[in-house]
Length: 138
Image 1: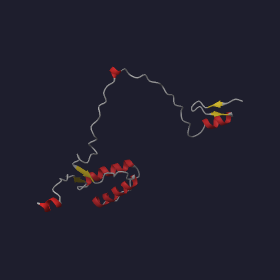
Image 2: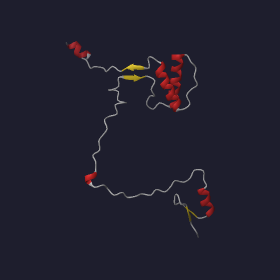
Image 3: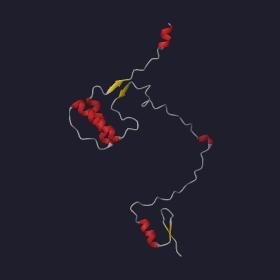
Image 4: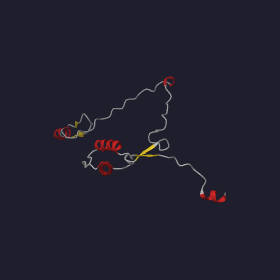
């Protein structure tokens, strides 16, 4: 009995028509992975890894302003789009179509930052002062 093998994924088929059906699928099978053994570099050529500084862009301690219209963590794209759409109507009074994809949301966000004067809120760090108990003791 002849066993037919797929060249891409090494799957075996007992009949030729099954192999052809497998190869003519709309979503092709995954290519087999060929692992190559790479020789390690000599110890003299290994460069030290320089760690990048902490991402200061998302660090609230270093931000001077807070963007009120930015996408919130784990917020769905459509929810963000509706929130931007409502704010755009409130600020400008113009009726726009709801953004349908992420690029349109980003475009609307950019335009809203240009149009809204109150888009940014200044991030004033809270200074730890004496607590109420300490004030009463004094």
